[in-house]
Amino acid sequence: MIHTYVIISIAVLLSVMILVMIGQKLKVAYPIFLVIAGLIISLVPGMPHIEIEPDLVFLIFLPPILFEAAWFTSWQDFHKWRKQIFSMAFGLVFLTSIVVAYLSSSIIPGLTVAMGFLLGGVNSPPDAVAATSVLKHMKIPKKITSILEGESLINDASSLIVFKFALAAVISGQFIWRDAIGDFFSMAVGGIAIGIAVGLLFGFFLRLIPSNSNIDTVITLIVPYILYVGAEHFHFSGVLAVVAGGLLMSYNSHCYLSHTSRIQSGNVWSVLIFVMNTIIFILIGLELPIVVAAMKDYTISEGIFYSIVIGGAIIFTRLLYSYSIMYFPWFLSKKLRSENPKPDWREPFIISFAAMRGVVSLAAALSIPAFLPNGDAFPHRNIILFVTFVIILITLVGQGLMLTPILKFLKVDDAGSDLPEEKQEVILMRKLKETALNKLESDFAELTVTNSMVRHQKHRLENEMLMMADKSQCMASTGDYVTAMNENKDVIRQLIQAQRNELHRMKREKIFDDHVMRTIEMQLDFDEAKITGFAHS
Image 1: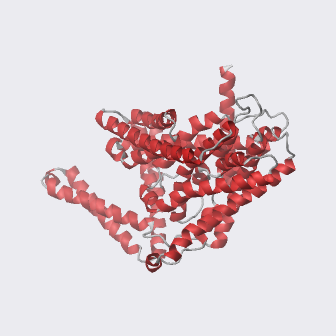
Image 2 (image 1 turned 30 degrees about the horizontal axis):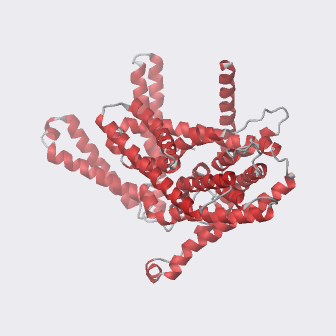
Image 3 (image 1 turned 45 degrees about the vertical axis):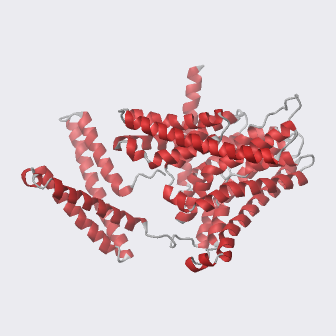
């Protein structure tokens, strides 16, 4: 039995990887392509029905995915755009839930406002996984990406809180606004407090007790689950606990993680999150038979009509809200008008259009109990599930595929940013090389004379400083700089490849130990990564 499960798991992973490679070949973001592939596979006759287990998503998948997203979120950008991020993550979620609640209760026969809030809480948050996975392949201004990723980090918390209160209202038959608002703030504040406390505790623990890169990597894998389970145990927001803990530990990671721990854990996390994301998106597509089978009280055409109307209202509400929070403060404040240019109308449009729903929405809908405590069937559960599934397809597949041509049509660039990343990199590296050179000259002046290896380090730093100066001069002319950098990278890659070929030739001669050869090969890999980067497609 175990052998069968292992074989099936390997076959599924291999199939998903092949689909991802096909999606890359077709230049379609893998979340979109996997959902489409899952839909097609689910229609194959004889294909077994695979149902997403909500607890699996909320407990197994959600904590590490949110933790990884928080870890690699720019704290500086998050703080810079915090007002817009929190406004979208909380204000827009609540507004969308209200719009969906009253609209759905007015067009779907028998659906109450409380059930409408349940549907709104499920569909109000854009998905963190979809936003990160789809947008990283597109040329979008840094400000927009920062707002979208920051919003998607914390809007799951606000939407799940709305969902829990609406579910309690449907089951109990009553809803008290004062109690709900008080509980909301206690859940949010409590979740953030637990995240900060656990993050500080593990940071102190790692600084106090000696460890190695293997132990550090395992601990980073465990922490998200401790954060989530701990917060949920005390009925606080597990999502906010994970995000707060991830941001805090990432910001202070230099205090307790060595360079080998950062490299190793980064690679492990990259593979883990990639595998989790691929499984999640293929599962969304495979849910089609489950969702359609649940449609007993409504026809498919009725469900599609409700989905299009509600989905359109969600998109329109986000569009209106995005323009409002960007333009109203600028028009109302003389200070903003004097210090800042008029906002670019394309930014709120892209922020609105790039919001895609994903697995959290589907898992939340599936977690609605099939029966009430008294044994009666949960009312309208099937239509809530169907509408959620169709809205995911509309936003993830529909908007996701249209986003690239829309960006090209709008001719969006990042001209409004401060310093280009290349210039920032040169400035930073020059300062670091200068610091190292000053340290050598002040503390190790005698060694630079008596020790040839230390003297070589000084010459190397001086040469690198000269190269940084040349880079700065090249940047005066963008065309010359780009050409020079491309030529330099090409030369370096060919030099590294020549060394790698020679290394492999010597490996066949079996003169040197294998572990020494692997160490040298890894060093060549790091040298090449310096010019190509560590980005994963």
